[in-house]
Image (cartoon, rainbow, N blue to C red; front, side):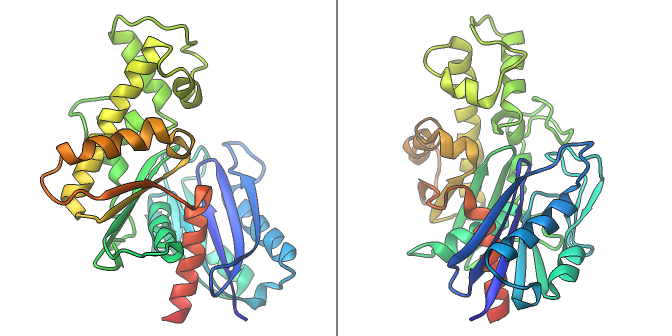
Length: 313
């Protein structure tokens, strides 16, 4: 039997798995993504996590036939690194991944944008694998993996389909990347509190929420009972719908799978409104919109699947 590894480098978690050529997971580990000033960096935790998952699977590094890494971007595909990520709080401008993992495993390592890994995972593990689909993640950031005619749209530098930085309001809120009016500035878990504070500063709306300690979780928990939370999340739904309408018109997917912590934890407030309103907003085929069935493992399973598919040719 051949064994493969998959790694997910996210803004809040780093995950590593080992599995067989069928995608069956043998072992998994998870660690917190380090904050700025942490003694351990992202690269070090990736290597430690791989060591731990190999130990749990009772495997030696040389038994791994290939490894896939799904990581938040932007990516430098030539050097196999994350570069100046807006959603990583580490102080390091460049985070090497491919070369250190290749040294550890002595195996071929492929690097993918996390959302691209997500769409690979959704297709690999699905009962039906449509050739035209989008995996949308609404989490710390906003991103998408796009598959057209059975091929993942990666782009020459691996950074295609960075849909979180689509402009949904000209001259709007500043995004974590420094741009203005980006989808991510309004709908991501990291930016929702800032969105709410901007609304509170410009709208005469009552609230019992503490604006200083506000989180995406407290906003969603207060929806329907707090006027500010309700107004902000209704606005967020409008931006989500606008972004998804853009995705439909740009890529014509048959299916849009929605993942990420914001969506997974609030499907009735995030996914259902999109599904209900989409048909009235698009002039082409209306795709099926559904919540991921892979939970929080779309990216890491996609990274594993990418390694398996690369080895099989």
